Image 1 (spheres, rainbow, N blue to C red):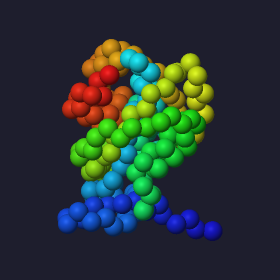
Image 2: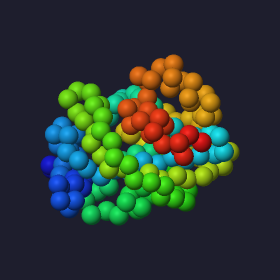
Image 3: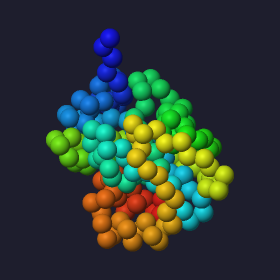
Length: 174
């Protein structure tokens, strides 16, 4: 049995969307849609270490969760679905902002994305994480000051988009 490729929404020059295979979007640096989720508990942010089996930026720390919507999937539903799939829990999410960014993610692959950012609030003492090992190698809550210090001392341990987000968007600097 052959699996169909995952199709995600790419953005044409006229702003319309069209389906494209996910790996092709990264290989060809096509402009495409994505979502990024930030789950906070006060001054702590839940971050994840990407699984070593991921085809790009494996083993690097990133925000709580990020993904691409499936073709014709509403962004809000995508964000809710993916948080539960990757980390095993749900919290109410609020759409925060839309940003565009580009980054080289290694191995000839590129992110060129229009990202809708979501923020959720959680009480970490009541969250039971159930990590999907195909997606997430580890997760931890980190205090904002510790995260800033870690990222300044060893930026290569963090995904390019996570570094960009924390540098450019003050509302994420909890």
